[in-house]
Length: 181
Picture 1 (cartoon, rainbow, N blue to C red):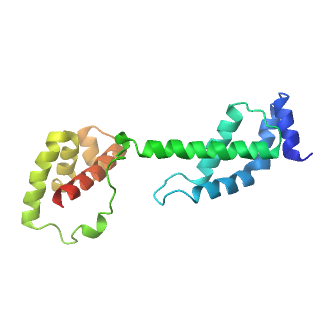
Picture 2 (cartoon, rainbow, N blue to C red):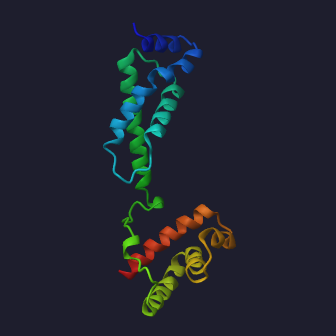
Picture 3 (spheres, rainbow, N blue to C red):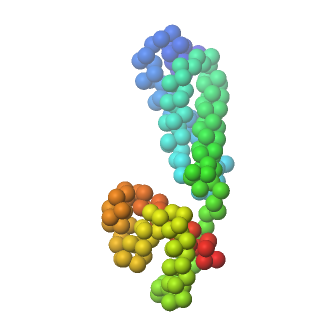
């Protein structure tokens, strides 16, 4: 009987110290399993292998499973990782996280010497439309784009956090880019 099977039996018998000894024994193998799982994920995925391993381990230990042997433990770990990835995919595709919106890279289409006067008028017109749907986002754009405030300062002026200001800015750029095209 190997170390892992013995540890799993100790855990099943209620030995809480065995939980502390379990992670160092299985960590490298869980990382390899997570790496294989992550290889099938899309390039824009922000979940890292280490985070997947830790979430998986917490679920396995937290649910107080009883594992028969090494194979059973790693089968459960693989299933746990799969469920975590599926939950994240569902979350990313949720409407509240912009799941129905198409993501595009904007940096290549932004002129380096500033917009032309006609573009400024067009942006102003679209800003009015944006303000009808998302007034706070439109105010942020006005403060940042026309007022010269950085996003953190503009967010502070609007009473929102810096991270929310950055999210609003990304949304506004995408919205305006879509409107301009």
